[in-house]
Amino acid sequence: MSKIWLITQREYLTRVLNKTFILTTLLTPLGFLIFFIVLGFIMNTGSDKVKNIIVSDRTGILGGELSSRDNLVFEFSNSTLKDLFLVYEKGEVAGILELSSPPDTLQKKYVIQYYADEQLGIDEIFAIEKAISKKVRNFKLKAYKLDEKVIASLDTEVTLEPKTIKKEKNITSLTTIVSSVIGGIVGYALFFIILLYGSQVMRSVMEEKINRIIEVLISSVKPFELMMGKVLGVGLVGLTQIGIWIILIPALFFLGTLIFGIDMNAVPTLPANNAAEQVLNQQDKIVQILAELKGLNWWKILPLTLVYFFLGYFAYSALFAAVGSAVGEDINEAQSLTMPIMLPLIFAVYIGFSAVQAPDSSLAVYASMIPLLSSIVMPVRLPFDPPIWQIIVSISSLIVFTIFLVWLAGRIYRVGILMYGKKATFKEIWKWMVYKDNF
Image (cartoon, rainbow, N blue to C red; front, side, top):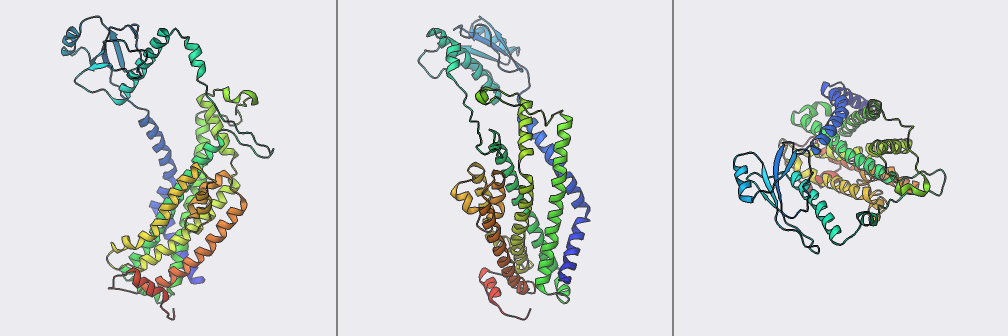
């Protein structure tokens, strides 16, 4: 154990004291925050070039008025289409919009003409179509002599407001949405973290084997001790990074609430009899979402997520270390050998996506108790408060299977780490697993 601890300590300190690790750990949460802000800005940015458009409305549907986007300026004209083309050729307008005939009150499709040599943006087309669609709707309402207020009252927004029977439970209409988002983020993050640090273990083993450093190390420690030291060292690095992120991310959230002036205690209370009729403004929704985040059982979610991370990482990293020991000087060999390891991870992520939408489905429940899948699927379900017996079965089976995988990987590692000049195949690896020696 003392030798395993020395190797673990070396692997841990070498990586944690690295400048790249320090910068990555501190700047990643800030980078994600900036990324989402920039992404939101990009997604909300549309066409901004001002375009003057002449409208020829012979139907009178528009009533001499049309408003769609800030960058589109509409000017109505009674001139002939031929005269409007001359105006366009002078470069005074960006295009000509023509409504030549009124729509039939029974037809569901109405085509208008837009004359221009340059295309409109998709957002501009949608905005014009939506604005004219409202005008056509009003035209049909008048043709049928219908009151628009009466027609509008037919559209009723139905909101499902959950009410718990047990007093200690507190579920709102946003609880499921927030739980889904948190579960999806946790599952996706675990996938990348397990893959990232498992790959680091594999690369570390490969480099030491290719550089023949392993021959010196094996003279002092057993192969299994070396593998365990590497897996533990890199795993502790991952836990350190996650622990720092757990502190930094809430701190950034708290800082954001101070900057934007959001009061967490000012959560609006909705009357029980008309909750579906209340319309919250944007700030109220943000306050409710933050309140839902605050109301989650983080004392249960965070420790269990760390348990699943460590067990999942340990299982996959042992397999990655075995692959690293089996690979020779041709690093491309690792691609074919890692495919069987990657498949459960990929399946787990997709099942996790399914669990976000249906956390109590048979697929999600059984997958959260199957080793290699449970390390990602169960953390996705944790915000939905799954039954405690499922968590116990899931962790127990994952512990037993992880011990088995570490033992199996150790048998591959002990032979593969000293094997040179021979390409490892799956058949050859099987022989290593059943091979008996005195290691």
